[in-house]
Each structure stands twice: as structure tokens, then as C-alpha cells.
Length: 241
Image 1 (spheres, rainbow, N blue to C red):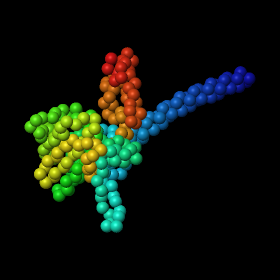
Image 2: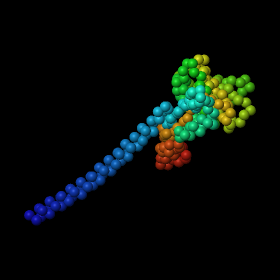
Image 3: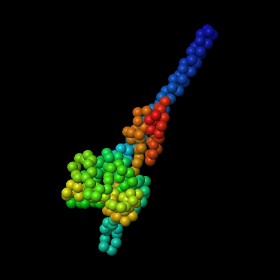
């Protein structure tokens, strides 16, 4: 009888230990799943832009009007210089848009062109640090230069260079004329030329589509920048070696 009791107690203890091990494993699985679900929710939030902006490739773009001025004559809109526009963008935790890729440039232009009324002719100030080299714009003695990019609205894109001015002091004015289906790109002094619209860019997911780290690395999103975590045996800034 005593032997049977001892066997039953041993079996019960073994079952309890096994149950605890299974519970720990189950909790571990649930914890990993919770982390995975949280990361997915963060990624979904990262692809949501604030009201009044539109999303492209991990960033939100704000197409903003000029300053609203209230005076004795009522409400009117005043011009905004590119330097002022840059300051306003910083208030939105963003930067005055500078072109990073041709596809980005084509997408944003199509968005703005579509929003523009047929009778409207907005002049839009953007940064022009990277864009000049990216678009392969060259100053020519003949003046205007046609720029060819893919677009769904079939507008003509025309570049108007500004001669004998240092590139670092320039901004780009995008002059849209929907009536003639033309968009002019004009170089102007950042602190002198005034415009009536501007575009701010807020980067929210630097790892969108994992385009930076290639097939041999995982992109770690640091919001305004990124870091590549390389697979075993690979190294380099973009895991290319």
C-alpha cells in the first residue's frame, strides 16, 4: 500500500514539473508572439501620415500654403521665402523637401499637379541641395532645358537655370501652369526669392521596403536614419561586403 502511495506521489510530482516546463515554453511562445504583434502595429503606425499630408516610401509630405495675415483689410495670404519655409517645416518636425530619387520627384509632382485647380498657378519652394545633381541639370547657353521623367499627367517639365550663382545658396521654385500643362523649375536665391507654397518632408520609416540593406542585411529603423544589421559573414555600411 505504501509503495502504491509513493508511486502516485512520484507520478504527481513528475506531472507537476512537466506542466511547469510546458507552461514556461507556452509563455515563451506567447511572449515572442506579443513582440511580433507589437512590431507589426508599430510598422502600421509608421505608414500612417498626419491629416493633410500624403505618404510615399516611408515619408509624409505636407503641401503647405503661404502665411495667413490678418490686418485692417481682412484676411490675406503673404509670400513665404524658402528660408522661412524651412523654419516652418522644422516646427512640424520635418524638413524643406529636397529630392532624393527620381521616382520620389515624379510621385510628389504628380500629387501636387493633381491637387492644383485648372485656373491656379502655384509657385512652390523646395530645397535644391541633392536635386540638381540627381536630375542631371546643366547650365546651357541656349537657356531652357526640357527634363524627362515619367508622369501620369502628361505635363512638360522645363528647367530654367540661373547663371553665375553658387549652387549652395540656391533653392528651387516649382512653377505649375496647369492651363498650359507645363511645370517650370527655376533656380532662385534662397533668401531673396519669395514663393507662395512649400513642401515639407517628414521621414517616419527609414527602413520602408528595406531598400537600404539589400538581401544580406536587415534594416533597423531609427526614424530619421537607419542602421543595417548584417547577416553572418557579411559586413559594410549596407552589408555589401
